[in-house]
Length: 107
Image (cartoon, rainbow, N blue to C red; front, side, top):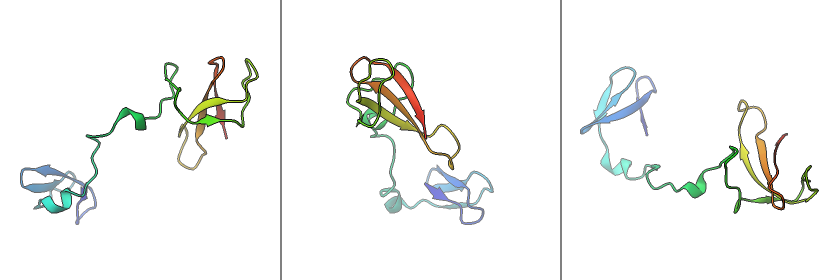
């Protein structure tokens, strides 16, 4: 990702030039620099955190500091998601390893 030197907005590729989406400033594209950029093209679904009802939690990290309200087991798979603003703690979503009961915990 490249940012405009004039206004700081994100620039977009247009052929051999980079064009600012805000002020129209253009610069030459630096292909050597672009090789170091990270893209999401090779991202696998293993890195994605699921928190909806149909999420497959198996294989996710296991918390041992919780207790299932349904069966009393003290182990649950969990994922973490930022559900509020950035200055609030994240929400942990759990699925019991024994009975499959789901719940969430707000810190």
